[in-house]
Image (cartoon, rainbow, N blue to C red; front, side):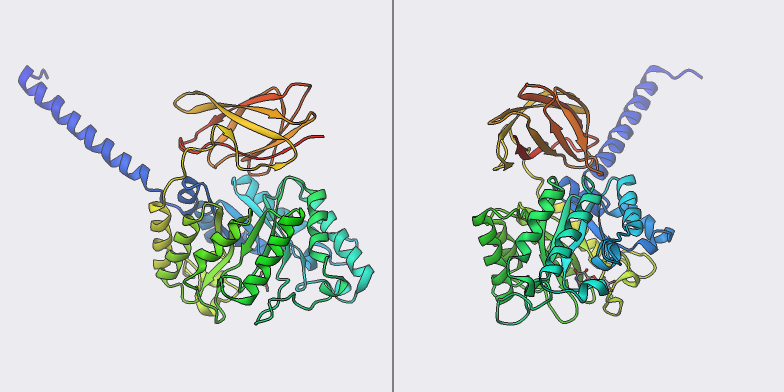
Length: 441
Ligand code: XIL
């Protein structure tokens, strides 16, 4: 059939209008991320969950895990009783399974935890004094070495402060080995895995005016002043078991961040999952640039350690709850971080040399960055990408990667002091790589 000219014009106009309306629909859909992980990534953050190795065979569980989350914390599998059941006999099976799942799905891993008074194996519970101190340090070294390069953040020490009004350390067998046990653990962890970010993690440290919060704050301040290697503080934020979301939570996060550490919400769950409290926590993290992400302590209410309080984002059937919608909406309406870095030197990179990033050529799907190192030879520079961005090519250096594929360690491969790389945007065209450390010898 032939179409006369006027009719053909109408037809073409109609097709064009339809195409335009479809294009608008597609654009709108592409702007609002539809999963927690994707939305958090657009804001330069992660959204994670605790994972139990024995649930990885449950396809309803892994479907939600792989769809929604881009960060994993093993719920129990990296604790001392799991990884060193007998002294100097290490057992990594379940932890390795979780790390492999994370790696296969592009998720970052938070290691939890190297030194803690709870969930110790029997042999450790019965030790004291120098024998316990040495056993603890050996544990930190062995475990951090085993997972070296695969852990983005380690909870090096967990829950070392007392509840109540003292603001003091908790009494424990580890504390009785001497007040310097925490910094000794951090130094051992740094030596074993120099590229992992090292965190102190605790609960009931959410309310800025609580003595326990202030006690931890003073310790972190002291560590920063004395050069103890600490990079971050984790706020468990179990608003279950009788503890509530405090209205000064954002002040707590920003006050710690002002000490020069990143802050992480590491074990979030809220009794009965009120949408308001979940929304507030999300907005508080988004408001603090050094708040790197949120981890909920389980996926479905039935997976929770406090399942009786139904504190999570999915019900037992795996359906999204109102709190889920509130978190996703808050993430989607958060501001996208400025196109960073920055040309220039990133905020004081850790280490003893300086690395300056210069933006290079930009194409539709990728862009180049070159980095100039000063202040030392035989350097090693850590560059962190925002997922789903990935480096596709590098030059003038020897790269290695963490399990997530987003943290690149570039080492000098000669006497040069400049290297470069191409980053695929994979749909996120605004984020830019961050230089997180520069180390030279
Ligand atoms: C909990 C786990 O969820 C439970 O399965 C286990 O029985 C006990 O530990 N603070 C922490 C977490 O740092 O490791 C704890 O996890 C919850 C409180």
